[in-house]
Image (cartoon, rainbow, N blue to C red; front, side):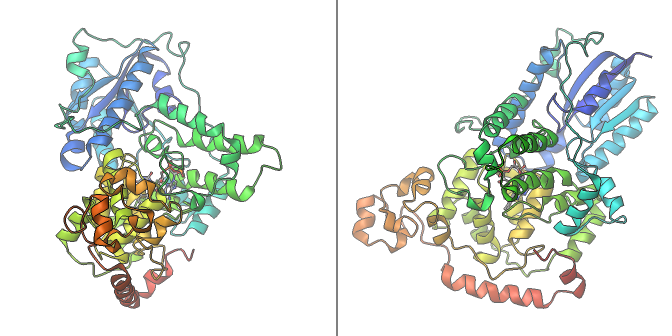
Length: 524
Ligand code: FAD
């Protein structure tokens, strides 16, 4: 039987390596590629304007690629459970396809839509392609439990072998018998959303440094994969958190939205490595970057908040938790997460969020985050440690919310997991190792050029004071045209004093941990 099919794009905003889309095209006479502008996205979750802009760019790019195949993208407004029954009837749909998504909201949404599809006699096909591996399979392999350590995860993945090779994008040949009926009212009814429609003021917009979309993702990937030497000697801890242009790939937003398939990324890296001469090969470096990708996207599993390291070897476990129900997730979180008596301090939190801490390195990072939607991994370390166990003693959950709003790559699992890691609430336990908001940035940027870029107010400070402008004599402050306490804040805390006090508070929290929680985290 020839089908009338809806392919539902959610994440997975791409044509390459999209097995659910290919399943839609099998025996298909009419294809409706649909993206649902779900009010849950703009009402319940806090998504910042940069991320919306990225999403709209990705949708436009997708529409453009679909047009080249004589098809179109339908952006439908409304709740999926209300929209689908109407579409099923209106278009006489017989098949619905989508990419599997393990986030709790997505799981409950998909359950409702699948039930509705069954009521309407619509066959449902979903495929796993956001992660490198099937998360359920990993849990099964681990005796029904999400693996809690990196080593355990690694052992399981080893038994599964390499991830599947990505599949190519559909061609005109695949589309030759397929039509997408499109009315003249398409733009009006199912056209692209605008930022104004989503209630955002576009007047204060900065430059779009990382435009959304599959084409840009593949271009960026190509650009980086050409740099064989760089790929083969990549070591994340050696990259700079405060370079003027990114020292890592900035592919994360593209992987998060699925503009770039994790398997494509993984295999491109693997192929680059296999193609280089023996002298260039440095297995350790290669493993770091490849592992990173696999961890990152194989994992979806521990979608709970739980892992990440500066080497990025950990996010698999985070992803594993993603397939859990919210209740189970909370239970697990509580059992692996050290309970810390964080302070409630709205003033400190606002100062951190709004780049007013008086520590130029921290404020420059938070400014970059707000303006551009991306900051380097180690910059994330610095501000996360500062907010939590390092200086302000505010819960990682508050930081997670701010990152969720501002990051282009905001990913529920990876974000929360990395926050837990950095706050030493789970997986990382060396709470006595605290980042200095002064010394850390100096290691890679002595002159403070990064600070000057993002905090132009301080640009006339000499290098000797750029990280600690409050130490500059009054005459220097006057010459720089910036008086501390008037034009730029005094430091919000005395780092040397508070960080020592916080280490003691952390020690107490660790002393109160149950024996169970001390066993579960990774010893890494
Ligand atoms: P590259 O170094 O070029 O790495 C390539 C890819 O690997 C990235 O695109 C990303 O998909 C993945 N990756 C690298 N490091 C990590 C890591 N430690 N954990 C997980 N994935 C990694 N990453 C997100 O994708 N979404 C988030 O919401 C997120 N929140 C974070 C919150 C905190 C507090 C911290 C410390 C880290 C967070 N990360 C998050 C992880 C990491 O910082 C980013 O993935 C990375 O900086 C993205 O930049 P890149 O693409 O240039 O990375």
